[in-house]
Length: 150
Image 1 (cartoon, rainbow, N blue to C red):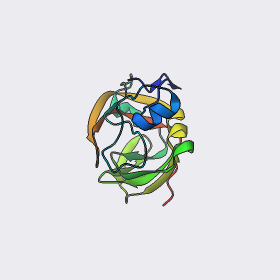
Image 2 (cartoon, rainbow, N blue to C red):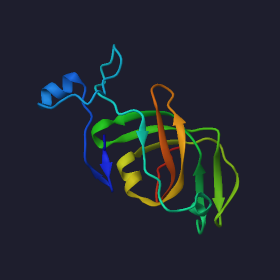
Image 3 (spheres, helix red, strand yellow):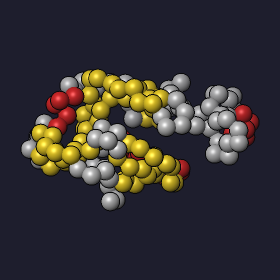
């Protein structure tokens, strides 16, 4: 099922309980018992873009290259705010080049704001296994802004 199309939300996931309350059909997104969090989208796919991955860092004067997020949790569901850590591959970008590793960082960020700041999407995708359920196949993104808190 499609959740977002060219930046516009086009679908919601439902389990049996939320579908009944909304007068909709379940989309089969209930989590195993004893789930109290409601439905959850897993096994996500994001379409690739047009930028070769090595070109994502071109002309970045100073930035951070993140290869992996870890321990990601939803902080405020209605505001789409998540928090988590970078892990095993966080690097300093200077003058368009990945220069050196940096310590892992904590972030707290609205995922919608982050996606809204997308400047480029890589041509290639990567399959990332979730720490709990499913996996996601996603391209690398170049974002204008992302909030690291420590």
